[in-house]
Amino acid sequence: QVQLVESGGGLVQAGGSLRLSCATSGPSFSSATVGWFRQAPGKERDFVAAISSSGDDTDYADSVKGRFTISRDNAKNTLYLQMNGLKPEDTAVYYCAADTRRSWSGLRAVWAYDYWGQGTQVTVSS
Image (cartoon, rainbow, N blue to C red; front, top):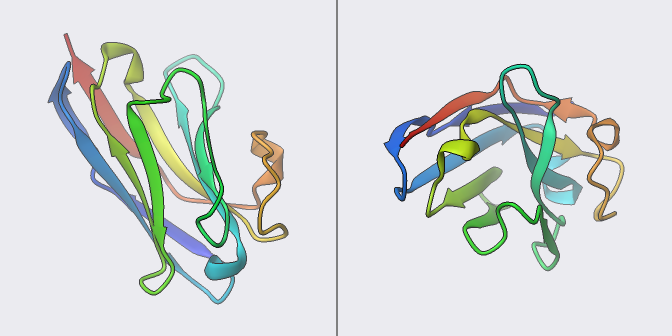
């Protein structure tokens, strides 16, 4: 099993930055694809970014490409999301997730991930 706990969310003005962290436990983190999703009120949970087990491969939603950077530290069992140039439309609950069945797939679907954190709120004011 993998347990995931997000932190780093908060309130920031448009144009600002936040760094989200996802601390994990369990033996599967270093071999798993891990990613970030977000869900705004009344909307579906959407893919944000993902990174392969080795960190060599990454994937970003078009809406965040060039502004967000995903990274991981396997020695610390931690996933990160550096968010720069934040916009009001980035406001959402952000979830980290792990796909322990694949080291890398490029899949962006919610169903591909088998473990989820509880989420952290990010609010961007205009």
